[in-house]
Length: 583
Image (cartoon, rainbow, N blue to C red; front, top):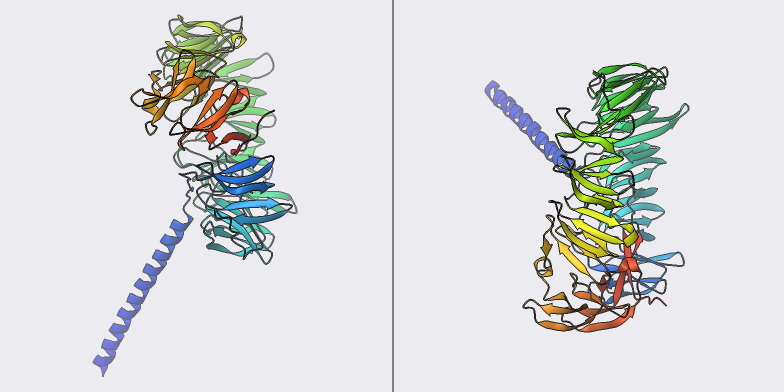
């Protein structure tokens, strides 16, 4: 009998251990999927299928072939995701949702609306995965197929400030946050929540955390929740500001508590709350600290490198000018080392590792290298680093040119505007009195000169165009043939004797040279044709589908067409197509 009891006891222990293991596995699986569900992810739109149509102030929808999908009879039409056949149409305060078959959908709800994104620049200013619906006076989320993401349990749902794909929800008078998968991120127990705005090209807004606020009898109090949804700071601070110009995943926060300022790095105090004010200088990666109307400097590690003894500190590039009074001052570097007998008042670090731009007491600019050797004397009214050994410089007359580190002029001083084209080593120069635009390649050779021109940078090329001319260049300044860019096209714009037409890949004329200007065919197979100051449209077979009809504004010198309609931008990332004829 005792052996039987012993066997039962051993088996019972094994069963308990097995049960515990099963519970651990189940909980682990649950936590894993819960974590994956809360991971930050943006919804990308890869294919535009629908666009807004405007006719005589009324809105509808067209497809990429220029066919009318929804008649333009509405005061407002929103297309929150142009991949999806979901159109939110409003007339006289009544909103319905239609699909591409003109059928009303989502009729089981009191209303369905798009959710605008806030504080984020986007070509599509709405949440792209979900819509907001109302049922029994409360709000929930559905996807674009009508699948319920969350039940209607919220008093409000709106886009989160500074963070796409995260939604602010209100429940029992308090705010929380969910993502566009419906996962709860922050419990609804705050008076206000905003994302801190931290952004990187790699992670987008994925590493941005949340500043939360509650109202107390002593005023507003703030706390902080990081991007991993861990509470870093309790809601007890007078103010919280995250430093956005930092690299990596470290979180630096300037916070005020009981009227005193300090700095937190991640969840640890970096600078104690002993200051009346703290400001961050992103050029030198230092903090300017204030106490009793005096100023000093702490480095990025929190160490006070310039004592709080000065009435004012000015940031002059990598020089810090610290004043004892209006006439007594000293220069320091960011490490707190005093710079003696400097003939410069300002030293600006450039993106070139070896060059610094200097400014002397006469406010004249020059250049030195990292060994403090003078390369360019301080004789220019302005200098800006370009790339390589080249600098933009301005003379007394205000005209701009380009010089090298030997102070040789490589681009003449004759321009009012001189700048890089975005982030590539191509120079855009303008002579305003002649309304002339010129381009210089990365070797400073002039590659283009065009009057009344505009410039457009694509992901793979630069286009320079005017009312009667268009040229394409790669990012090294080499001129490109449109055939090398628009490889899926069968016809290409061609110019001869001052007139434009279209040729095929073999150079055979398909559309005669009778137009004043034409555009290349867009991805949907439409090109513009201009004659006698008016624009029309042809299709990819070279057939005219609209004779030259539209008189467009000068800034629309290369219009884009869908069928017989041309594109109009009206701000906030939105646009529509129209057939409005200018009288």
